[in-house]
Image 1 (spheres, rainbow over the protein chains, first blue to last red):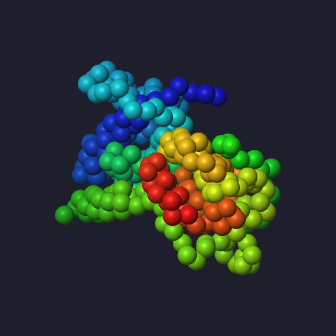
Image 2: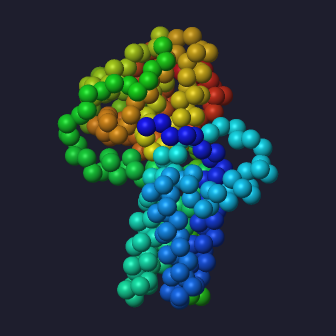
Image 3: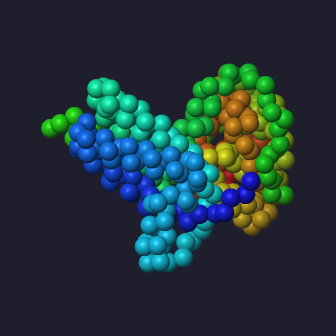
Amino acid sequence: MPSPQIDPRGQRFAAAVTSVVLVAVLLTAPGPLGIALLAAQAALFATAVARGVQRTPVAAVFRAAVRPRLAPPAHLEDPEPPRFAQGVGLVFALVALAGFLSGATALGHVATGVALVAALLNATIGLCLGCEVYLLGRRALASPHSPQIPATPTRSTR
Amino acid sequence: MTTGQWVLLVCVLLVVGFAMYRVATDGQFRGNRRRRVGAGTTSGETAATVLTSAGVAVPLGERATLVQFSSAFCAPCRATRRVLGEVAELVPGVTHVEIDAEHHLDAVRSLRVLRTPTTLILDAEGREVSRASGQPQRDQVLVALDRT
């Protein structure tokens, strides 16, 4: 399933927007404005997971208003890693939402904070935290002597 | 300060600290005189034999082998593949092998690979002499190879 490649700066832009929204959430939740912003952010995450990171409203703004002002990208990237990361973001946003709505505001604040750390790292140094935690999670979950899938190097150069 | 403001402050400090650490260490090769092999392995074992016993065929280069651990959800893995592929073409006797970390978790565990991409440099005998986590630049790979 080859998906079209994306401009990595679009992801940085989306992460910057996410960061601004989540900072606003931390400053206003559990008030109604904070809850509304958090719900909107969760909807954006969900859109990216369901339709792909290149088909969100934020991606449309990037293409219309930001990309024309930038030089052509030095390289393109695979859209699947950021899509996975948006799914991780969605989980934390939903946990935070559940926390704020159920009165467990501390949980809401902490879950929002985790999502904010991931978004800020993505916006500032292009790091995909969800992607890195993925391997650690697989390492931890698989039993030490799990059956192995027959091994082939994915590619070797001479 | 409100709870939200405290959480915000902690988040920003965490991000600044971690980002600085990452930018400073990403792609940097660290040699190891201790010849890092798996925990609890016998002294005759090398990184290459660990991989072989995990079922990964590692055709060793005459001079050195660049072993790259990658995973599906990894943006810098693609760029790392390009860099290491170029180096393997450029430097005689150097080969590049890419391994899907998710499918070889035993090897990942015994070689203590924590993130992708991680690049191991093996010498002609298959011993690990150096490793870098994160995307290395071409010059960083060449310099590390010179020390091999």
